[in-house]
Amino acid sequence: MDKVRRVLVHVCKDQSAPQRAQFVQVNLAHVHHVTGDSFSSTRLFTPPPPPLLLHPLVYTSSSSSSPPPACLHLLLFSSTRLFTPPPLLLHTVVYTSSSSPPPSCLHLLLFSSTQLFTPPSPPPACLHLLLFSVLCCQSVTGHFSDGGDDEVEVSCSLERKQFVLFRGDGRRGTPLKRPAFCPIKHLSVSQSAAIPLDVQRRGVDVGVAIILQTANRRVLLTRRAKELRIFPNVWVPPGGHLEPEETLLEAGLRELKEETGLDLEPEGVSPKILGLWESVYPPMLSRGLPQRHHIVVYMLLLSRLSHLQLQASLRPSPAEVSACLWADRQLVGAVVSSVDAEDGHVPLHHLQGSVSVSQVFSDGALSEAALPLEVLLGRAPACGPDVERVSTGTKFALELWLKSLEDLRPLTPPEKML
Image (cartoon, rainbow, N blue to C red):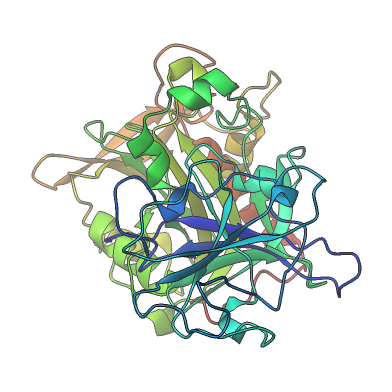
């Protein structure tokens, strides 16, 4: 697997047990623990998640005293309590890699087992969380908001090759948001069924986008090359997928260098997480069924250099970037006022009718050009082909950046993720 993907979710709502956190977990390394084309760990079941953290975990075998077969890879159990109230009886089953796939009628909870145990011993500490895979057509934001709100606060960490989102620990979290027109939010049953299986099995990818703030408080935006398959000709911060073994900061700095040529040292920036954006492509159902699903981590980097100093080192990749610009607070304020899927006046704050950008030619050379301001203030069209504009997720991140300049609220600390 060459990218960070697979979102796994856990919720414990056992009122008799101590309050536990909600989790979304992205497995970077090994999601498929079961061989065979007809069963995949990314197709276990859909929300709502199980109501109980069940232990001690038990398994069945031909004899209660005999150990499980050596080829046992997974401990699985199913319960009709996952989706319906009765009955309360828990049905247990052992599944081995040499067995035929379990019946499709079973709703299974997956446990990766490196060591086996017998009842009444409790599960090893690594198995204390119940996890399930989020398919491409399931909303992470919707899970944490119980399907209602488009913005929630979560906490996040990156450890052991897994990116984990959770809430319930009492701390003030990081914003996680999806657009009101999120295609997955509005999918009908028939539309969801029409999504190709290979798309659903992709799960949810994880990306990092860099909001690079200069010493004179400008931020770098790039226009994606028109040849790109996803969001072509749209203005975004530099960024891309998180690779295995990378921290979020390492991924962000690598993507920044690959796309813009800016080679910044970790010691020369002050990284903070601004927010998380749930991105789906195409961005609206009017343009087709979902093909890609991402959680984008917007990371703020504070540079000690001015935009003019950084501009001198700018070497964008023409395969990925067709133009660059340094936006000040005034321009950013106008951009975020142009809310997608909403009508309303956009205050221009005495802005000129055009913005200076660096055009990128096929050989990598740069040339100054004037971009009409109305392009950056454009909104995502409700139907028809997309247009050159600032992406909806970028507007979300830029709004958080403006708040960070004024708000004393501390941003998410780096901890293990950076």
